[in-house]
Length: 156
Image (cartoon, rainbow, N blue to C red; front, side, top):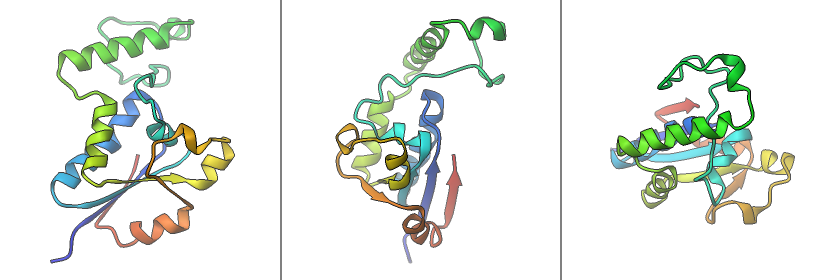
């Protein structure tokens, strides 16, 4: 029987949006899937060497649970994003959620292939030294070769 394949397109780079592709990728890899994550636009943040400081923003995210109600106007104040990010990290720690750098390491150890969109790397003038080692730098057409054969393809 042929190995199942999961293709993930990661487009977001905030703390809360970094978890879904990595959770799904690590789970699929544990289930025996061949997995590739194509990181494009802000999803390239997942590939930076240090992802421990990613931020979360409640602005434009009315579904974000908060321990106390914060009016939208206050959410735009300086320092609020850092405060909300710290609250999210604290909650994750209390709930024993694996820290983001460790989750990415789990994916890499499980042979999840991380791919950087070359066009976006060029667009944002990113240097390969900023990103983790072992990445493939390809265009969308190359990724579609894998995605077109995948059993599951997710856009996150």
